[in-house]
Image (cartoon, rainbow, N blue to C red):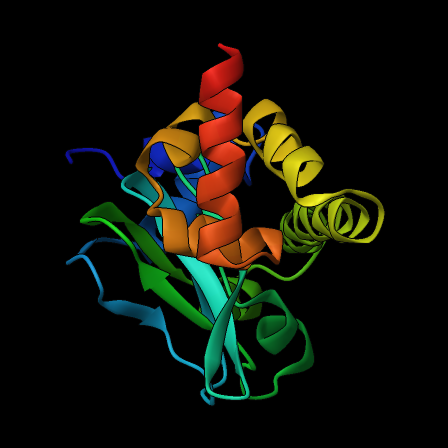
Length: 191
């Protein structure tokens, strides 16, 4: 990856001048499949802009992983509650496939460039995170297992639908892997 700052343009900054301000804070990164990007229990002070790969955010409930979010390029990966509150993360963010991107220390950028750009970047992150979580919450509250999967296929990025392992999708949808298998089989039978 030659120009890591080019990854940021669609997400956090809105002009070449703003991208130039952020560029010195970006470092190219790679993560292997299964590698933790942001661990539970640590305060998140950074973000990763995805250039390639799939990522999931999950928490443990009664020794079981519950997937909260799936991300693929173009996305910004962050343990947002931890970043906003300055508190230890309650979730783990992990590479599902090999990941490439650019890592930035948000706290350093905000210290050196306080004001409208830093505030707007945080607002954009918060808005996107909120909308994603609201979409998932509505899906879980109002839909059957089959409707959840149809919603997932219709609204999730195709890379995630194709590339995310079924057991992760089942957890995200709040159904047992066996139920997801039945839903997929019934859907395939209708095609």
